[in-house]
Length: 238
Length: 238
DNA sequence: TGGGACACGTGATCC
DNA sequence: TGGATCACGTGTCCC
Image (cartoon, rainbow over all chains, first blue to last red; front, side, top):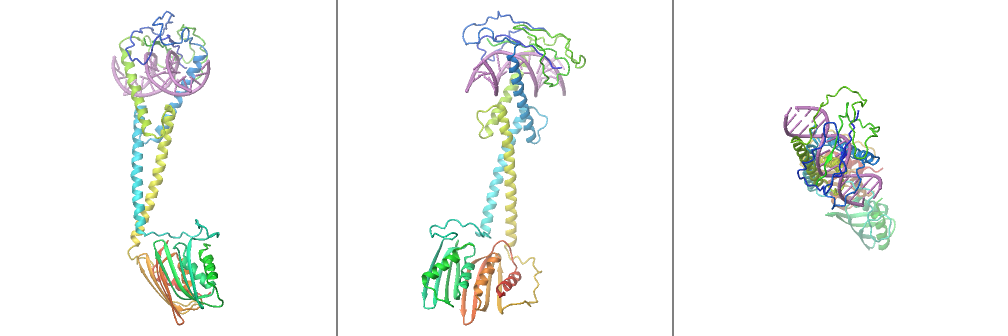
């Protein structure tokens, strides 16, 4: 098996450059015969620092390496071609050039499709958002994001105002509407044994404003005590 | 000018198949000599109708065509390679094999991305549809609520009124001011994932009147479902 | 018989 | 120098 070829090349002489020029002329070679190209191949001996002297000492150990390397390169390339065939649809048979062409248009097609799909997605996203006002559903726990100063562990940024008049207290809290601050305030009032006389809750955009008037029950709080207690209980996420 | 090569190939004998087989063995060839490969090349001697006799009447008019054709083929292929480089990102320089490899992974990447984008789109589509469907007074299902028997263990006397308009609900509760009903209502609203838009609490004598407007979060409740749930949660003394 | 497609060996060129 | 990559001409196979 294996064809063995015994290519004998001539020094090739001069420029060689890609001059597609009609190479004609080399009318050598016979059937299965070869010709040694005797060294007398002349051809412009100057110019182009060619290898000079013997370069084509052909059948030696070097060319073998070269040939083998080239073989591997070719094999690798063909492997890639094969792999490419596998990922491009509707490509079976066809020659390499067409395969490449198909791969190119396939890529373009994919990109186009992805682009349009993405914009459709964005469109839908906007629709969804507009449909549901701006609902931050159950974004419960975690998210203790930033609390700016206040030097407390898991606190939420919040404004609290407390005014005490006798046994009554007026409370105003302003904070993000997230995580049910109203529930936290009411629970706090319960824990502190403050009876609610009146309360109102309003939401403006992301902000919730709570206002309440309460009457102290079993014990008395100073303004600062109450403010701190509420700050801890309402501001605490957990 | 131009190198002329005189590749001389041997009939290659047998199958020729890609058997990379170590061709070794042919340690022949001398410097610029060639050898004809005598027919005694072992390897199955039959098979493969070779050209017989002279085929490579080389330097004739035929080869010119052949050479030219091959040239064009090569050029076309390289053109495609060039075009491929243009559509695959981050590929400049690199050899052909790597280019093909990159093109392949790029295609896979595009496909993957398109797939995920498409499924996200579908997801959003479903969301939009469900939002659209449920926006209008969804007096659809339910019916399974059934209540009648209000006989519950530790309930408080209480009036509850619920009105649902799309994803919003209006709630009015009237009950004794004792045991912090406001805290219970807010906790209930939190548990039911109802976002408070507005709420007010007023106390008249021993009676507390709570009024709230909420927006449903993750799930939809019918009027009766909501009324029952609130009744249980707020009315339960524990 | 002729043209298309491919693989091969080889020369050249670049780090 | 040597390894890696390319373009080329050629042999071969297949319609």
